[in-house]
Image (cartoon, rainbow, N blue to C red; front, side, top):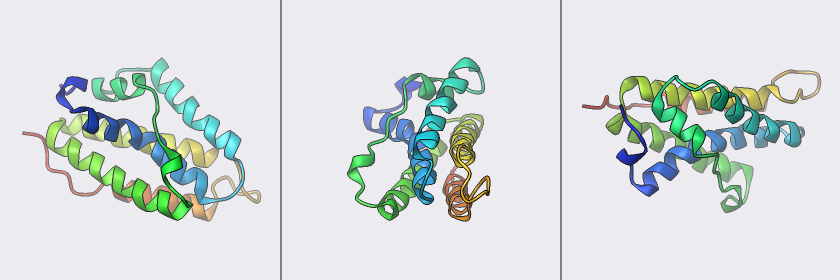
Length: 151
């Protein structure tokens, strides 16, 4: 099993920032609902904290509290571009250090959090807007990129 001590501080920050960054990508995809959508990020962490056990690695990430520095991005487009790359980098890192089950658990947690944000506020009477749906697809594609299994 992989745990916090298997990563450098920089690597750990990369993993920790992935889930809230995905949430911010969805949050900024369509205008409106930012309070509810921001609340959905915290709620996803609270739910994961109440129901630990998918993998120890995801539990450790959840326990480490969300961290995403949205102030370093100057536009939603910049957040999306760098955030999606951030997710690809996290998957590559986990592919080299974590078990396939831990990588899958990380992917599921990030996607679940992003989905919760998308569903937190309806846009123009639609549960998930087209821009949010595209953001979810982009996040999923970034998370499902190539990752070599850990040896």
